[in-house]
Image 1 (cartoon, rainbow, N blue to C red):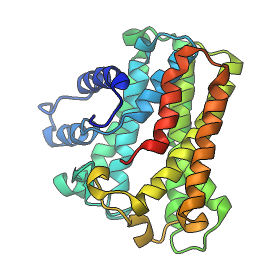
Image 2: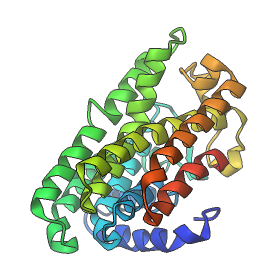
Image 3: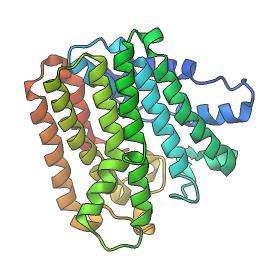
Image 4: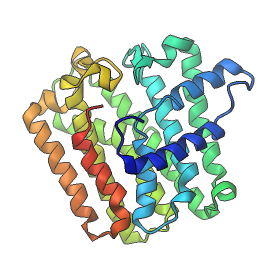
Length: 297
């Protein structure tokens, strides 16, 4: 949690407690599987997806305390995706967040199963939202659909598939946009729309939050591409230059670094413009958008 703005720490600390309680304990049989799940999920990180859930709820005047289930679920889905991303058959990374990747520590088979278990546990946590957090069942059903779509073949997994299939291909703007809006942006969108639904958003508010999500996801991924070229491996917690090594489609590869930086800044400004009509409760979403350009990890 180092490096996060002070105003976010309360939310992040609360989320860590929620996640620690929601996940099966490391002593529950089969212990190695549950230990692997906790290793990657409780292993730190920015918690941006959970913060976006909370920020969207607050922006529409909702009770942030009701977002715990969804915030935990999106972090579980994110953790599962990172475990699978790091596998030798995917990006083949040995480090994540400054420590050995899950498959390095536990072996490939347990890593795959830990990711599978985290995905299913995420939806179990969503199912508990009415009882644990007072989210109406009809809203819970909508949120389940949002996360399933964002994480599935038309969202994050679809983006990862196209990313893999595009290796060694000539740079193409349409394909690059598809990869980034699905592999990264779809989960951001599910988190933001879900948080807004928990908060009781109107149709107009939900539409605005959706547009914010689209620009935020693009800004984040462009910045991620830039950091892979010029970032510090120690701060990132993983090797840099992997996209180049794998000949992946990235914004710097297609547009160059300076143009990519300008595009990321434009996306963030679009986020802030969308929030101009929201009250002070949208402060976290405003800070999160600005943070994208400032982050070095």
